[in-house]
Amino acid sequence: MIQVVQQGLMDTIQDAGRYGYQHLGINPGGAMDRIALAVANSLVGNDIYEAAIELHFPASAFLFEADAMIALSGADFGAVVNGRPLDINRPVLVSKQTVLRFNRPVSGARCYLAVRGGFALQPWLGSYSTHLKAGAGGWDGRSLKKNDRLHFRAGNIPTSWLRGKEAVALPWIAGVSHLYTAKDVIHTLPGSQWNLLQEDARQQFTSAAFRLTEQSDRMGFRLNGPQLAIQPGEEQLSAGITRGTVQLLPAGQLIILMADHQTTGGYARLAHVITADMPALAQRMPQQELHFSMTNEKAARAMLWKQEQDLLLLQNACKLRLEEWLQQQPV
Image 1 (cartoon, rainbow, N blue to C red):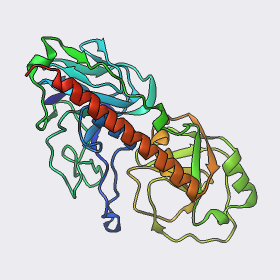
Image 2: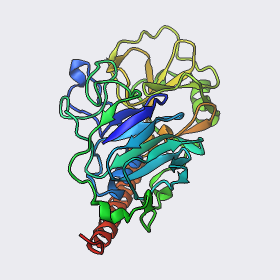
Image 3: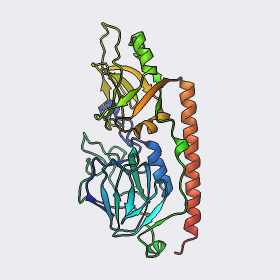
């Protein structure tokens, strides 16, 4: 098991999310960056959408009370085990009584900590993801706090694998850059109310730079950019919304709905971020700029298909390398 010895900013248990309940007002939630979640789990031999810890900086510090195999992916927060630096996107063996800390934000906004075998948790509506508003799922339906202790499932490693060392990095690193689309260009499809935008506002949407504000979080990324306007006299009715929906707020600024979005909304639904771009978007930090580019469904499907194929290839490569390494270890 691991114990939280220092509380982080907002660290929660997340998996791929829970689906099929939005009509009841329960959003899917889940990991903000599905690629990083899948990579971290692949590196330790888990199912790619096994529950992991989603970390924000400043992140929690963890005391390992049992030997474990872990992997970090997504953001680089300068991880160290007992002061020894750890690479992201690499499987690492850590021994009990060692402490994992995160010293500085190097790149990215969200880091994922996966443990071989996963965490022993109770699912809620078929998912381990934390639903903060409902206070359910994950660890007691909340973010992790100091002194929380999370148990591992089966999959712990024999002590002999560590050979008395505090940490052992396995001899391979997963290359992940090709799994992400360009972080500064966000591709969108037109929303049901795209045509309500005034002509000059449509041009600004695809030509101007937008900056993430400090009010961005798991619910939505608020943007600061040119003030956009819709045709006068148009009344908006509440309708179902989803992750990636780009809405126009009354003040003329945009918000992109993220993992913990509400299930319905009445603001104009101008566009939708394509699925392939959501992981790169999730790693954007406040004050970073982005640009929107309109695309079509065929191109969006092609980008997602390539991303999924590349992820499958990486998953299979990780499985092969890990199986080969395990066969070489003493029992």
